Image (tube, rainbow, N blue to C red; front, side):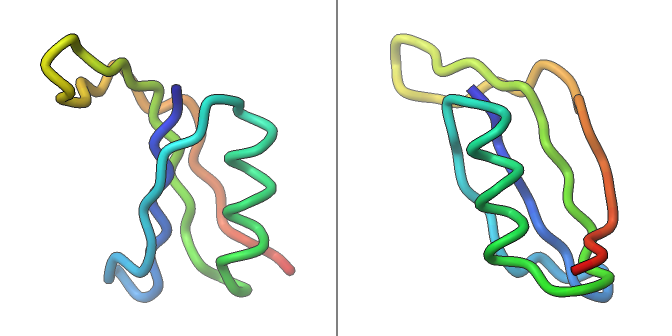
Length: 64
């Protein structure tokens, strides 16, 4: 599972979870705008429903 966060000028503008990396990247590109920073973290959902972050697997700036 992946947690995506999108920042514009260092302010959080969107965050969401996706099961597939390709879906996460595609959704980030649809939501974000040019020069927004996108961070994708690999996460796991524990039995009690909490999300535990494992690592940042991708960071990029949107160019669309």
